Structure formats: C-alpha cells, structure tokens
Image 1 (tube, helix red, strand yellow):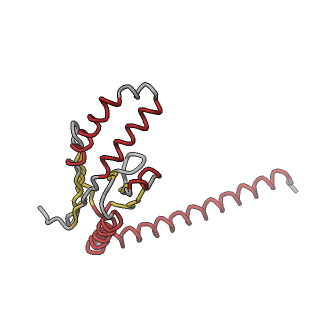
Image 2: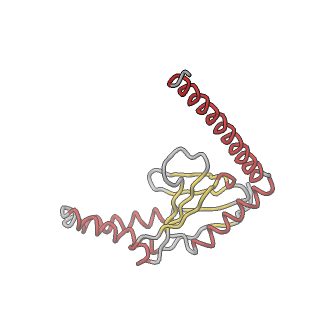
Image 3: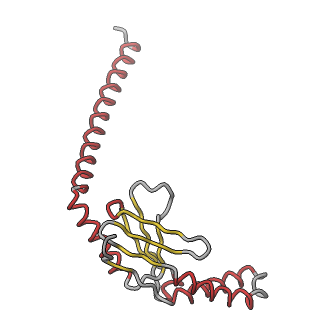
Length: 183
C-alpha cells in the first residue's frame, strides 16, 4: 500500500448544515413539523455518525473515498482519470462556510460527478494537491502526451472526413445540375 500524500479533514459544521436542511424540509412539507421532535435528534445522531465515517485519502496513484452508515461506499478513483474537480457553494453552504468538492473522471458512466465531498476543510488546497499529483503521474507515465496525440489524430481524422464529405457534396451538385440542364 502506498503512503498517504493528502487526507481530507471534514468540518463539523456539516452536521449543523444537514440539521438545518431537515428543519427546512419539515417546515416546507408542513406534515414534518410535528415530527421535528423525533427527526432532529435522529438527524443529529445520524449526521455525526455519517460524518465520522467520511474519509478521502490520496496516495501516489489513487483518490480513495469512503462514506456511508448502512450502505458503505468505497471508491478508488485513479488520479490519471480525473478530468475535473469542481467546487460548489450554495447559499446555505456559504452561510455555514462550507464547500462541496466534486470529482469527475474520464469514461464515467453516470451523469454528474463520480464523487462528492461536502465540508472538506481548505477545499481549494486539497483539490490543488490532488490535481498536482495527477499532473505528476501523467507526466511520469506520458499519458498526457498520449492524450494530446490521440486528440490531434482525431482532429486530423475529422478534417479528412469533412474534406471527403465536401467532395461528395460537390459531385452530387454537379450531377443535379447536369440533370436539370442537359445541354
């Protein structure tokens, strides 16, 4: 197992953020108001348990994310495949000083981010460390150059197809003109 190069720490304010979300949902649905005495302690307890089980660690080649209470989710994201790491801040998140980090990869099958991490302390620094390690890994393996070469090859192939299509269209136009004006 490789040494951990970076590990995300999670802000305990995430628990309060989730609690406010439960209150807002309960008030908006109206039927949830009488249940607040039951749901608030339950949300507080489960939010703390969930937060305790969230982890994100980066080693030399992978970003390993674990979370969940009943259903544990563990994802090992190869750094080479990370295409984007975005930061999301909604109005309620900003009120709590929280940010959500999203991770997208090349070839992922689902719409939206592959991984989301809410409440990473110093989100930008963690994101920058992961992207820097990704770049180091790509430079070492040469995959960045291979990607650039395949993209330029794809562009050349696309240009060839467009030239052939244009030539075909010009031949069709010439044939149509001959049919209209047989002189």
